[in-house]
Length: 216
Image (cartoon, rainbow, N blue to C red; front, side, top):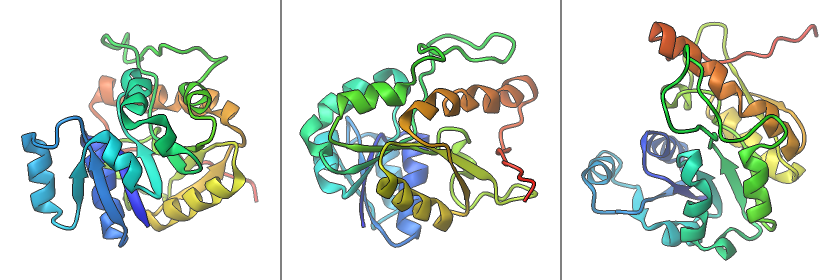
């Protein structure tokens, strides 16, 4: 498949490399294709492509939103909202508010009655959003190496077929999947980012992941 990744930071680069490793075509979308870190990524990943947000959104059969939550809506506008129509959009964002954590706890600019994913789905009513990759650090997003694995990736979205496609991708990436239902469930999934970050801020421990344990 052609994968367009909106965002060229650590998460976007990690996922871009992962999709290339799985044999997909990848374009990394960035506001500035000429910046040094993009050149380095391209050198390490010669089969990868780079482009502006708009070109990347047009390129991808499946798109990944991997920007800071605070700029997610503006990044979508830069892409051109029509380029998302009828496409799967993997939403890896979190609504993290600017400012340092308090006792290791991040603040969100949303509340428990609204998720950033729901805002983005309203912005892109014809896109098929699936929440994924928001509750783990980029180092463990592909082929996680935690003990007791595979760890669990919590997903949600309004389109069952889109979730099935994303679940297949996650399985190939080394994850167990827990489908939490409709986009409303992002109200619970996004705060997992806060929980995941606490050991990092308090103990400098950033390599863990979540696991959903079942009786049977």
